[in-house]
Image (tube, rainbow, N blue to C red):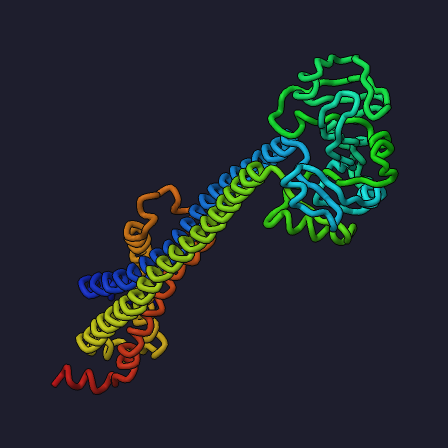
Length: 452
């Protein structure tokens, strides 16, 4: 007696029940596969959205950072050029110098050793550039009978640990004189004229245009000659310098550094308008940098909110799946079990005849489980195909059909295989009770009832 033959005859004889069982298994399998597709598509969509937004934010931040860096470099260059154009804007003076004398009379009286400038140049100072030692004094030009400001300088002293910079002012050679606008206009001086100052002979080498400042009444000669005329050998009144573009309170930083090198000095700043403009530009740069930081924080917040929103969506879908899938499996199992039991009771006489003809329990069990296997296999395959289509249509990736294989490239085989396997197990378990009932039937009792 062939089990496959018996199964085939059973299917032909009970087509309605078999089709109904296949549909129940197919619906349960479709629910399971569709749920898997939706849950996996949720993860794919979340990953794609986060990657897209992350890339967009990174590009935006990078462009903004480039703009800020470019603006910062332009600001730094503009400030440097402005400072260079304005010239020396720092005065390093002896600590004993009365600043009221400088502000009221424009003259200096306190002195300090000329070696201070060398001491400063040989240090590791970083907050100032272009050191220029000078003596300056308001004197009577006896040969011309006019009052002038005598300014003696030897030229800039290079800072040893830095590369050589182009000097802001050219040194005045010994025996030469540079004359301010008011003086050379009043005396009708020309370049090349020979003049005498306090008994010394000088050749006029340069005439300054009008500057609208004390420079118009100043004459410049070399430092050594000026020190001799003023009886200030090896002494100077001030060191002129150009401040760096320091962050924050520049003057405080400069004063602290210079005080560490030349304790008996004081530092004052000139050209307050230029300094104010530089500070305003620095503040604008700081505001731009702060805005960039805020934009980065805002981008991180938006990404966190997007991630949280997607997590909520995935949690809702997972919760719904946890209810729907078991319910559909339970309903399908109940229906298949009921159909199998009804089939068992309706076919007691046939089972009794088979028993009487010598059919073993294994053969009887094989008929029921073989039928369950076919029912689960067919229902599982149909349900898997339907579940893939339904799940894909209901998922967030349903509009992009070309990304189906990319989405499930790694798990497609597992998704396709899990449906039929679970369907076969479901049909087998649901039919197991009916099979046990059939095995317990006594052929003699059944045949006795049939003949009664």
